Length: 478
Image 1 (cartoon, rainbow, N blue to C red):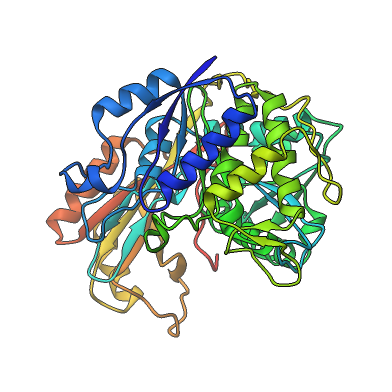
Image 2: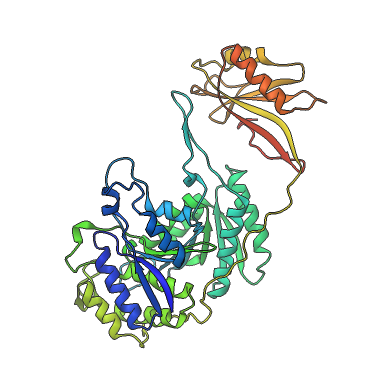
C-alpha cells in the first residue's frame, strides 16, 4: 500500500480527480490518500504561493503527488505553483507521452507515438532577469552539467525500460555554443553508454519543423526546458488534443503527476469534462510506484473505451463516436472495460515499466580554471563605438587593455560597420597583453578607474579557460 498526496484543484479539477481515483481504485491500485488544498482559494486567502506550509510537509513526506489543474488568480504577485513545486522538490524531468488515437480522435498524424523528455528546472526558466540600461533587459540562461546529465540519462533509461528504439536531442548549439553546446556534448557522452539505442541530434528549428510534419520518425526526444515546454504542447496538440495528455514530473526523491490542461472554470460542475489527461498522469504514477499491472489494466481499458466510441463532448464526433457521455459516465465506462484489451489500438504492456531508479549525480573533479579576461558591460547613450572606445581606453593599464566592443553580441569596435544599429548596452572586453597575466585585483582596479572616468559599468563577467579551453563566447563578426 502506497500513501500518496492528492490535490483536487479548481474548476473541473474535483470532477476529473474523483473520476480518475474511481478508475484506478476499481483497477486495484494499492494507495492511501492524503488530500491537500492548493490553488485559487489558498491564493485568495493571502498565500501568494497557492499552497500552505502544512501541505508541503505532507507532499514531502509521501513523495508522490497527484495534482488536478488549478486556477492562478489574475494580477501580479501570484507565483506559479507548478514552477514552484518542480523547483522546490527537485523535479528535474518532465515526461510527456504524445500518442495518436486515430481514427477516434482527429489528427493528421495517425502513426504518431513519441515521448517528450523535458529538463524541468533550469535554462531560461531559472527566471533570473535584470534591466541593465534604459533599452536593454537580460535573462540569464543557466545550463548545468548536473542538469544535463540527469535529464539525458533519464531519457535513455526511459527508452531502455519501455522498449523505445531511439533518443533524439534537440538544441540550438550552432548559436548558443556554450549552453546548448554543453547539453549536446553531454548527450553525446551518455549516448555511448547505451549502444543498443539509436541516438541523433537535430538543431531545434528544423527538428521542430520535422516533428510537426512527420512525428512518426521520432521516438523519445530530450530537450532543455524552454524548447521542451513549447514542443511538448505542440506534440500533444498534433497528436489529437492537449486535453488528453498527462504529464509526469520526476525527481530524485519526489514526483508529481498531472494533466497538462488548465482548470477550465467555465466547464466546472457540469459533468462535462474529460478526465483522460489526469488519468494518463495517474497511469504514469502507477508505473512510477511499481504498480505496473494496475497501470496496464487501466490504460488498456481506457483505450478500449475510446475505440468503443464512448466519448466526452470534447472529442465527440458524429459518424465516429457512438455515445456522448459526461465525466462520471466516461469513468464508469472505463471501469466496465477493466480486464479487457483494445482490438484496434495496440494493447500496452508495462512489464518493465516500474520506477527508474537512477543513481544520484556525482560531482566530478574540478578542472584547472584560468582567468583570461573580463567583460565590462557599460550603459552609454552614445551611438559611435569609436567614440566609446576612446573613452574606455582611458582606463587601460600597462598590463590589461580593451580588445573589443560588442553591442547585442555584434562586434562594433575595432573595424565595426556604420550600418550596425546599437543600443545603450555595450560589452567592453579587456584582456592582458601578450606575456602578461590577469587577476581579480586588476579587475577591481579597472572598475575603480571606470568609476572615476564616469563610465557606468552595470555588470562584469569574468572570462575563464577550463583545462586550457576558453569557455566564453566571442563577438559575432570576429
